[in-house]
Structure formats: structure tokens, C-alpha cells
Image (cartoon, rainbow, N blue to C red; front, side, top):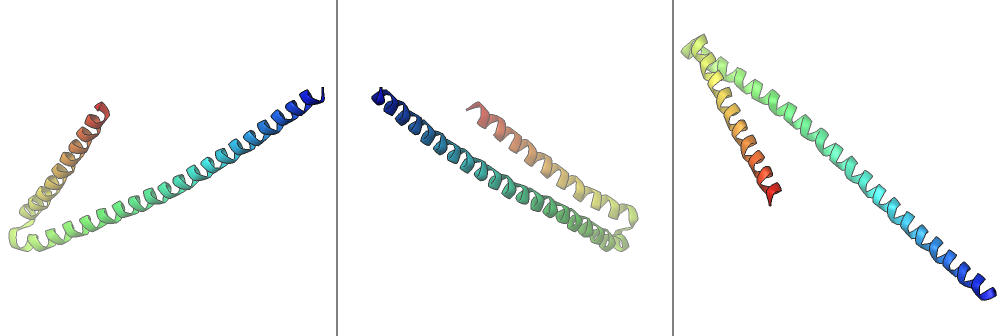
Length: 110
């Protein structure tokens, strides 16, 4: 009888120790995931801020380009040139998006 109680107590202790180790590993995983989420949130916020400032810089450059071209070519020609620059930028961005989209779909197939 004592032997059975000792075996049962030993199994209980082993089970409790395993449960404790499992809880520690789960807590470590949760802490790691929280850290990754915080870092990714910071990166996303900085990327959004950088995109906003890049857009402001582009708008400033386009305004300066128009101001430079308007006296030499007139209002409509200067607007056409600025619009052409915007169209080229849009085409480059669309092409880049299509290339990235194709790369993602082809990598999912393999």
C-alpha cells in the first residue's frame, strides 16, 4: 500500500513539475510575442511617419518645380510638366506593386 502511495506521489510530483515547466515556457512565449508586437508597432508607426514626410517633400518639390517652370513656359505648360512627373511616378509605383504582387503569388505556389 505504501509503495502504491509512493508511486502515486511520485507521479503527482512529476506531473506538477511538468505542468510548471509548461507554464514557464508558455509565459516565455507570450512575453516574446508581446515584445515582437511592440517592436513591429514601432516600426509601422515610423514607416507611416516617413511616408508622410516623403509625401510632403514630394509636394514641396512639385511646387518648386512649377514655380521654376511657370515664368519660362507659362501656366499650362508648367502644369503639364508637373502632371507628367506625377504620372511617371504613379506608373513606377504601379509597376513596383505589380512586380511585388507577382513575386508573392509565385512564392505561394512553390
